[in-house]
Length: 599
Image (tube, rainbow, N blue to C red; front, side):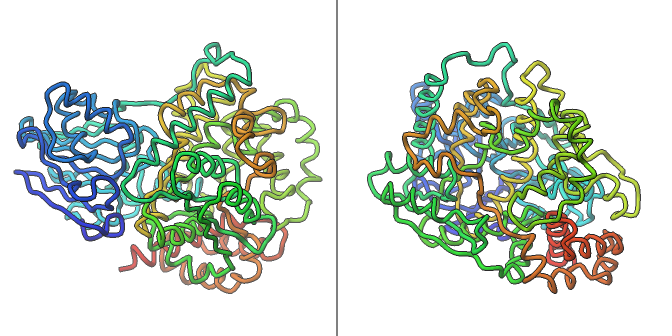
């Protein structure tokens, strides 16, 4: 199991057997380079601990613990976790600021405790059976546990078709589960694992939103961002920034440059297709702050890259932005071990077009329904977030309830099409995790409730999975300052007008960072690390698409009915519809199977 995770920690490895428990850790040396080895044994040898991640407030916690009488052998953050657990028991996790997956074996109480950070930045999967519990950072390792079967979970397959990723707690393997974000797992031999929530970032009630002036809120946000970036730069090795050219990564670059004494190292990916390319904006930011800038222009060689990406992901993963994220991570890993990235900003501050659509839907429902026949006849474009794509999505979902239409605008396969692909009615409701999350925020502003659904599902199960697997494949740690618990709590207290105003997204964030960035970046259209897959599939990848999704391959794998898949291919290649997101997901599923399951 440890060897299977060597890519996550190539610098060293450690193992310990403590009675009935064996712990192993792979290390990417970032803090306390000489003495930070894991597993850690502490507190009179009562506690053994391993972790993946970084505890941002470990120095403050260490000072508190020293004042309380604790004595430390190292200067690293993992030993702090062990002492914090001894001092506070299961309440230890709620005191941690950072990103982490943690395992603690309490030898005295014969209790195993697993913990995952409140936003799910770091992964943690587990399997329980035959009186044993196995856990790891990835299914790649968990597959080696004797009690874990490779049988595919049909509910997870349905989740994948709905979202192009698999919603927690499901995994693609029937016998394995993800520990949800903000949860603990507590286990003793002979008992069932107990999973409980210790933290739930949530929007405030509508009547409790902040009421200060926009100027005051913008100034406070700017300082909270500065504090978070400074905390995320703590390392004993250089830290860089993944610079996409948008406002989020530009902000991180600006604040990092004002904090560090040496030039920030920045890394960007560009495309020859102009509607996807942001290199010019990235260069503006790099020039303004004198960064040590590195960039790569991506040509459509996805035929060679897609199998490598499928191998790097432990589950089927159909978000096409994994490709540029994988490449920019490779570019960065040649220079640094740690980078900052902008995940979480869109969900917290209102950065998606779907949030604008959520606001407009009630007023435009009747005109949109009347215009649907005309909109459906619009020709398909290969440009990023094209007008035809957004218009078709809007009119197809506008008549539904708030949560259902919000999902419809991002849905990959509808329930009817998924049933056709699987040749059976759905066995479960893939939207159940969204419904549960939505039900928990009654009383918050309507838009904040939908943002919270994205924060707890799309961000955790798609964006953070993408960032973690694509970066860790290159032994690169990615830190996400927008998901600092203190910054997030501020964002979740903001009124709707601070997030969306008319057609303008991320209003307050843009106002806060306007003094820091070029106008073209602050007011520019969102691109991010996404790829022009619609055009690629129609031209350069045309033969690859038909070959990988050939009927005989689909019949051999046994997941999908070939007939509806071929209709999707034909419809996309003809230009009648943009099925690129669906087809990319099916490519990912097929390639994942042949790498991870076929043997």
